[in-house]
Length: 395
Image 1 (spheres, rainbow, N blue to C red):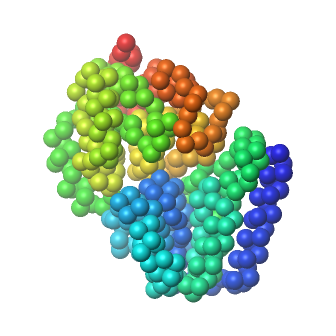
Image 2 (image 1 turned 180 degrees about the vertical axis):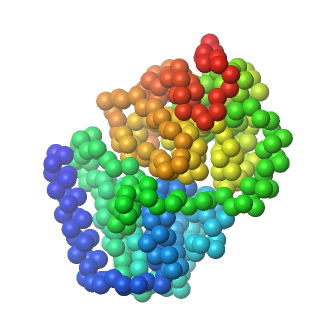
Image 3 (image 1 turned 120 degrees about the vertical axis):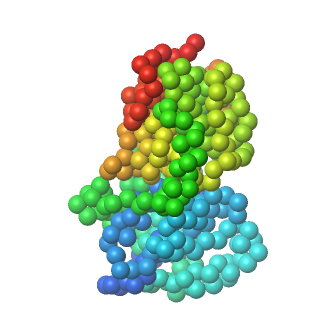
């Protein structure tokens, strides 16, 4: 069945290729405005940053425009992430509420007002032919210049038996690399392109005093949150890892949104130590500034993981079996820190399920198989600065 799924994906992509060439047979030689279409929340935008950096290098005199939507209005996305790059990247943003209020005509009018000469489409990993055809129609009606990139990366549009067979038989390309390929890749290899510097000097100067007052011991940041509960390693496990770091002489802070406050309290209770709760205290770029100074991040598969990778922070990430193994491996900057990805294989992975019935010790079996001992060992192995010499896991 996996073979049948691959044929179906190839046929769908061939159809999208024909539609693109029919609507935009030629691309401009020297575009003055170059656009990137990438919808999604924080992690989706962060995965597209290498592609955006490549376009900046390829078209140094062109104006870069990012067409994006985070979904709900209050969800963080490109606007918050690229706030310090306002002079370099123009952002055209819409939300679910905008679409409910203004409809398709309103979106097309918004797109028409920001027309570009060349637009690279970066579809989400689990898109469908219907979504991509709808987007191409909207881009044609809004008068965009040459458009390229509408491609399927998974079998999401196929019936469940074919989809599951394909997902379990395929080896996905990490999302950042998949998106890089859609813009033609990077000259002389992806690492030859300078990454975007998300945090501006004014922000670093503003936060420097606050961060200095927090102490000088090596800082471990924790990101125990995530949209889906069954993609989150247990707060108890995060807490035990925090205890080992603090007992060795380090300090620990929990990052997240206001909705992660209960998780932060559970982590501190499990650590039985002084753990700083920063959930809701920092915006996206302030968190990035903190991560720049952190010795290491321990995280779930979430936007904070990709944020740390974008600023070069060493990280240890705990992956569930929700997605295909390797699909969301974070991008690593040429000058970035080491990364260790912890994942326990289970027969049901990838599940792409909304909930999990395969539980062990109170959490999904795929996460229960990731031990605190392995996480602590990885933290001390990759951290750019380690506290003391003790590496024992607290009982």
